[in-house]
Image 1 (cartoon, rainbow, N blue to C red):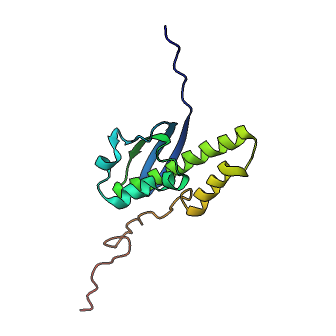
Image 2 (cartoon, rainbow, N blue to C red; image 1 turned 120 degrees about the vertical axis):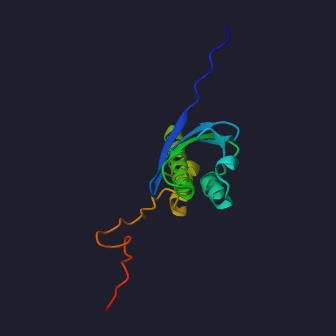
Image 3 (tube, one colour; image 1 turned 30 degrees about the vertical axis):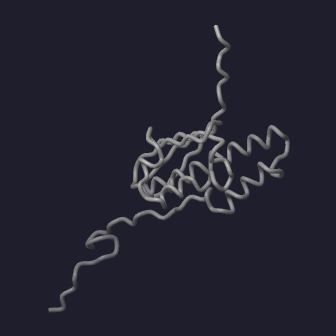
Length: 150
């Protein structure tokens, strides 16, 4: 038989935004990106969402070097794109930190510099803004019913 295919090393990252959760898996490859089994262009119709997804890859110049598989659920399209952005940044951070460990560099060097770039750009920070809950005796979170003096 032919020699067995060497298992590629994959790097995982989880991202969250509002109520959306994205699980991102990065593998060395040719730049293929799939979200829930669909291509990026067919999943996100707006360019701002596509740019948010690709931003960490463009920052690290890894767009054509890795394959990305994403499972996203919950929230809307914008929330999912933000979750994918954070998950991709976390997966890239895992990838660069393991590369730095294998080279014995620690936080210095090109791999540690990429992690610093990701952190400084804000891709590793979770956006904590959530929808405020509706309060009792009100029409919404803050909106009250119209007050009638007489």
